[in-house]
Length: 140
Image 1 (cartoon, rainbow, N blue to C red):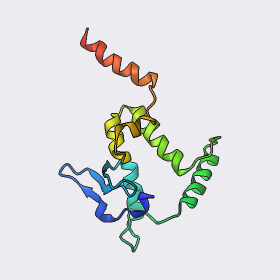
Image 2: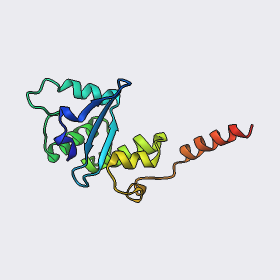
Image 3: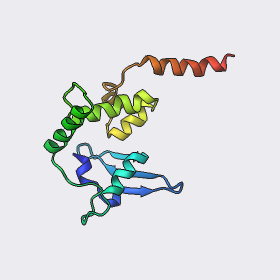
């Protein structure tokens, strides 16, 4: 899991005071630059006291899945949550479902081609409507 290998050197602050995680994906060695959302920065800050140079505590994939199961139980989600499901949810619901361009999602996911990302992409009625609303305004 790439997240286990993140160090404080991967956390970069740009000229606009925005934070980025800049790294190469372990599986593909593809460059990946991901903007850090405020909630993610709070989690990173929570663990900044660690003696190691890591951004987050090192935990096994099995432990991650146990935590996800606990979250599902607390949130009454009737689906088996796993690291893979979390990655899929990030790609579909969090990014594509909120209008992030597939090219950007592909880059953040560390995919070598857009076609690798397309299996995450679903045509969502809300996105089609939003895009058409933008077009409609140009014709008014």
